[in-house]
Each structure stands twice: as C-alpha cells, then as structure tokens.
Image 1 (tube, rainbow, N blue to C red):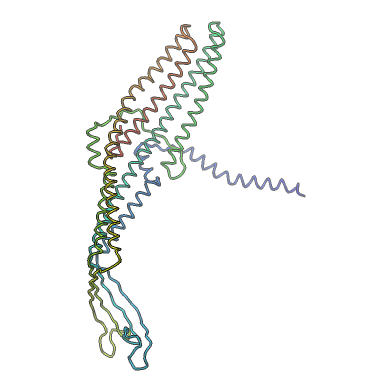
Image 2 (cartoon, rainbow, N blue to C red):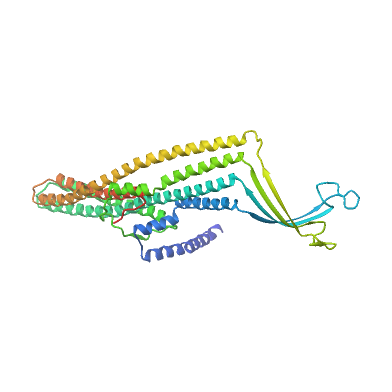
Length: 444
C-alpha cells in the first residue's frame, strides 16, 4: 500500500515545485530579455541617494530636527484651549453650601476657552538651540551625501575596471592559445623543443584561470554596485561612463577656496557650538522669573447654560502669574555647569575639526595629484607592454628569443594593463574624496 502511494506523492511534489518555479523562471526570462538600464554616474548617484539607508537616516535626522525647531518656536507663541468639566462636591445639608471650601457649589460646570502664554528667557534660548541643532543636522546630511558620492564612485568605476580587466584577461587567454598553437607548429617543424610546448601549455592554463577569476570579480563588483544603487535586486544594467576619459585635476587654490566657502563638517561643528551656547543660556534662565499669562472666557456656573434665572453666565477673567525661583537645592547651578561642559567640549571638537580638515585637504589633494601623475605613466606602461609582447612574439617566431621571454612579456603586459585599470579607479576615487571637502565632483 505504501509503495502504491509513494509515486503519487512524488508526482504531487513535482507539480508543486513546477508551479512555484515557473513564475520565477518566467520573471527571470523577462528580466533578461528587457534592455539593460543605461547608467551614468549622475544617475547612479541619484538612485543611491534614494536607496542608501545611511544617507536616508541622516536625512531623516535632519527632518526630525527641523520639526523640533518648529515645535520650539511654537512654544513661544500663545496657545488656545477649550476646557470643559463638571464638578460634583458633597454638600453640608444647608442649601448652597459645600464641604470643600475650594469649590463654589454642589454642582459646578466649567466651559471656557483659555489663551495661555509663557514669557521666559529659557523658551527663547531653547528655540535658538533647536534652530542650531537643525542646522547641524542639515550639515550632517550633507556630509552623508558627500560620503555616499565616494562610495558610489568607487563601486561604479570598480565595476567598470573589472569589465576592462575581463576584456584584458580574455585577450591574454586568446594570446596564450595562439602562442600554444605557435609552439606546437614550431615543434612539428623541429624548430623548438617540446619543453617550449609544455611552458606554453602551462601559460594557457594560467590564462584560463585568470579569465575565470576575472569573470567572478566582475560579477561580484556588479552585484555590489546593484545592491548599492537599486532598491530591488537588478543586475540588468550597463555602465556608460568611460573610466579612462580625461579628467583635469583642479588647482590647489581652487580646491582650498571651495573647501573654505562651504564645508559641511565645519558647519556641523560650528552649529554644534552654537547649540551648546544657547543651551548654557537656557540653563541660566532658571535663575530668572517667568511670566504666565492666562485669559479665560466662557461659563463657570451651577448650571450648564448661558443664563441662570435671567442672569448671564458668560464672562471672562485674566490671570497673571510671576514665578520667581528661590531655592531648588542647586539644580539650576548644576544644569549651568553641565551646559558649560558640553559647550567647552563642542569648542574643542570644532578646533579638532578645523585642524583635521586642513590636514585632509593637503593629504587628499596630494593623493589625487600623485594618482594623476602616475596614471599617465601607467597608461604608457600598458601600451609598452602590448608592444613588447608583439615584438617578442615575432622574435620567437624567427628563433631570436626564448619561450621564457615570451612568457615574461605576456605576464608583464597583463600586469601593466591591470595596474592601469587600478590606477584609473584610484584617480577617480581621489577626486571623489576631494569632493567631500569641496562639494564639487570633478567629472569629464
């Protein structure tokens, strides 16, 4: 009986698997058949800003701080409330008298609007502090945006360089195959020894492995870039920026001028100092009186009505309260000291930020300048490596060079091309790092 049911279970499991797999396969087929998304660097940055969690977190923090600022400013303005209550108080048995002297009657109904305003130094200082905190959060969002540029640029051009390296690895593998065929032909003609064929075959095996590794590297680079840019998994894209397009490095004076005019790190540090200064003012406001103003209009009567026995219940009243701080066991003094500690630390951090920015400016510009100078040499080395391989191969055909020289020329050409691709990525990333200080991304 069990044996007769087993094929049925297998068939049903297979049907379920096919039912679940067909939509996924169809979706994958549709995705592969659609034309790839063409992405330049600007498009990639725009998509990454919408998708990056760290950057969106900084933007959200800035938005929250902006709402805190609105709330702090609103606290300085008069507020209006409409209060409704009914009070029942136990009576004494005598008509109209109650046992609690604070209450006016056995039944009391209150329905009145209240305009409330508080005038104190602390509220003004807190509003200014919230404004400075909002400005600092906005600057931190700009810092996150510029940092995201570096990440996207590095990922974008790393994927582009991986594509170029794959083409170089494919060309090197083809060159290795041609050289293996050449050594076989020469061996059949009795012109070279069998050891040359063995060496050529070893070289071909290395080139094939390098080609497989280059494919894997490109795949991983594209996947990393896709995760960074797209909100869903999508590797059907094409990078259109030319990694080797000439990009001029701005002068050091231009970079210094841009960094001095608008740097979010410095703005964030400065606004943090301003926030702590207003925090000290808010803490010191605890020593000063506060004035409360209240205006009431409505009814406060024994009946919930505008008139009782022909007498109008509607009326108004105003209350002015001056709160004078006298003694709170040193809590205000402690708050002032606490605020001053925060202010002094913020000043030290701002000084450190200034020194660090100057050092970063010089270091990053030196990095970009060095990468730019080396890039031309790397380009020339890659060209010479190709030409040297061509010449050495021709000499080998004529019996004027050894197989080791050919292998060495191939290794040199491959290494020179890889170094050229890496140098181009290094230069692009160095320019993006400068953008974190200047705010201007240098592009072709």
